[in-house]
Length: 345
Image 1 (cartoon, rainbow, N blue to C red):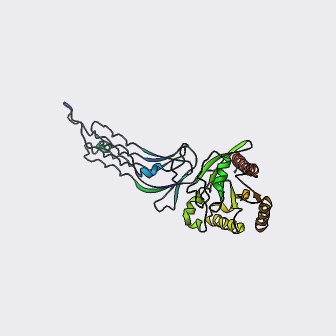
Image 2 (cartoon, rainbow, N blue to C red):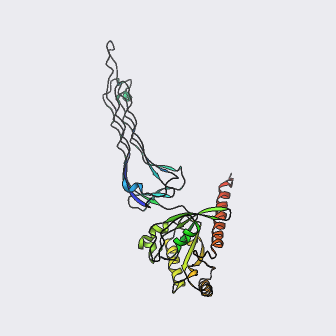
Image 3 (cartoon, rainbow, N blue to C red):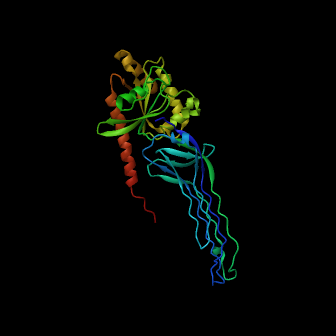
């Protein structure tokens, strides 16, 4: 299935039906009175989050969604039928933004989440509604209200527990393929990965979801290489695994370029927990890999893991570190959800 993380859609809710002007006409009933029914309500446009989708590709082939109009009222006090609702199904992690693609109108993160984007117009009143003691034969009825028209953007931000970041060709896809059943494209040239990939990883007694995003370049937070969209896919991660290519001439600069883009992007990325790993260490002698890792660690004043997805060097150790963080964060969120609200007089 082709991956699509952004789509533009046009929606229109249904218009309400018109009220009816009608009078009872029956033999031997001289003053039958008004019996015009009300118009039906227009259908709503609803967005529902479902758990069997992970892309917005369906919205590439259909961009217009219109709910049904309400039927007009009829005589004999018959109310018009309401218009049919139209439902858009989206994957978890979908944000709904306005026409300018700036203001977030809704954020659907869990299956079952639902939001009404456009309400159908009310049906008009028939003349029976206007009958009173002083006006027993009204000849007026209301028209139905028009529906709402909107142009919206749908933006998917994948929901994963951990995310892989690094420069292009840093070994992210190789790592994901080694630790999960995912089958991302792997090659020895930059920008092999063109869209995010997800894989389920088992670490000890727990499973978690790992996201591999395309390589970041300088200026990614401003949209260079559509890096701002890629960064959005790791916004919801609990921890980041930052891979630095051991075969690079300057691993310290490589790390700082990506780290700078994460900090500049914002959205809480600067505060996320991070593991740093020197990848592709199978491509050099163990002593050289250890020396590069030591140099990088001293320059950053952070721990650096010597890693190889091909030879499985420190693979289990890295997964256990990621899994432990994810497990602790899950437990913390669970405790916060169960914590009783503070009492106030």
